[in-house]
Image 1 (tube, rainbow, N blue to C red):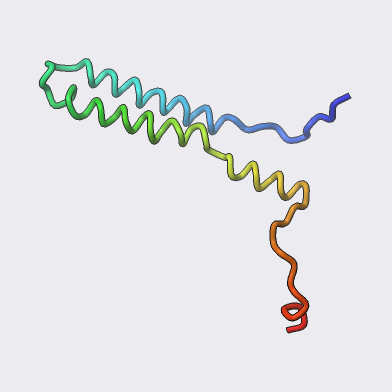
Image 2 (cartoon, rainbow, N blue to C red):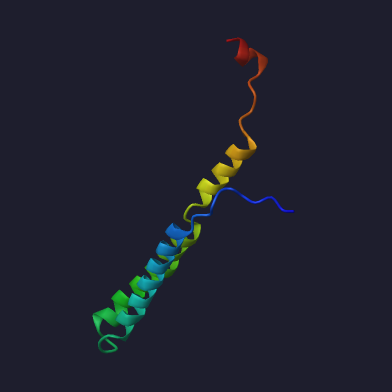
Length: 92
């Protein structure tokens, strides 16, 4: 029988950030569709918001909490990556 983990995975933060990123992307497409073909919103503002949504907001949403999970795993297993002190350093 597999061992059940006592810790619950907290995905609420990731989901909120993901929905926010999707909202930014949708907002970028809305700005692309507003106005004429040569308007400021469809030529500059829309693409800038899309780049921010795809290249900033989405990776943040996907990677939020990854470093913390790795640190928790190391603490649980007791893995310390620090090198032991040499005899000279220990005697000082």
